[in-house]
Image (tube, rainbow, N blue to C red; front, top):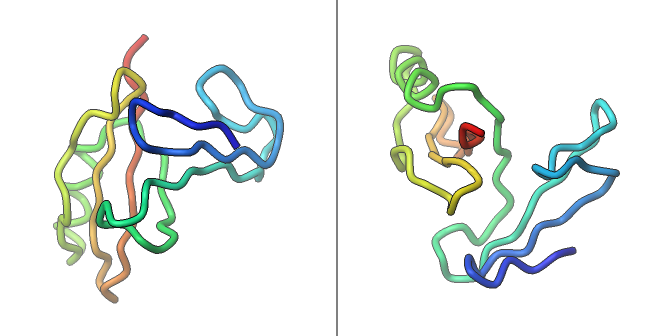
Length: 98
């Protein structure tokens, strides 16, 4: 567990990771926890995508609803959230361009 003090967030790794926090082992899961009370007080599955805007467009086309549009996560990348057709909150992650 590694604190990210600028973001009130703790990164959690379960397997060896690269410099971007991506697991080096296929199928491994890494994640993190925001400070309680920041709107996400339960686990949220987050999907890595190449283009959040395109992913959100597809979500809406397939009947899902955007919960939070694309927003920066420091200099690391971008995040967004949507509700699927069953009402589950799902996160999206897009790496910043290097």
